[in-house]
Length: 140
Image: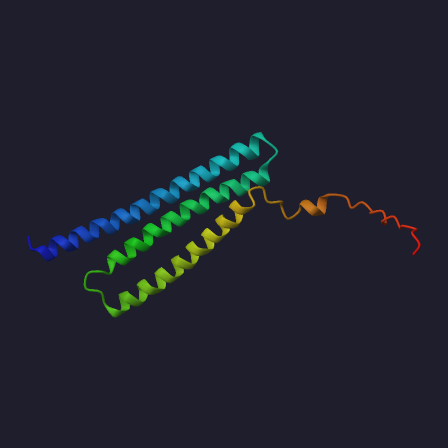
């Protein structure tokens, strides 16, 4: 067996492992996010917060899964790439990097405000008229 063939087989194996890890991480993230949401939404009245926590968990999983996929895509084109493969790789990496950036930005936004107010929260509270400030009757 030649070294070139061994390297190609090893490369193919590592790419498959990266794809499998991405599948595993994303699948576990989906299950965890669903579990978080169902447990909190069904047994408490905090479905809005449960949604946010489940979404946050899913975001972490997607981010890690996308990182494995980007690594696998890079490895896939390391052995004798064509210009077409390089262009496809660039497009895939750009798309996955943008998605990853947006996911991390959403995660950071959520962690800065751990209990964000739902968008409908202000609509459901009654508006109470405010009293005008007391005017002082001081003379110069």
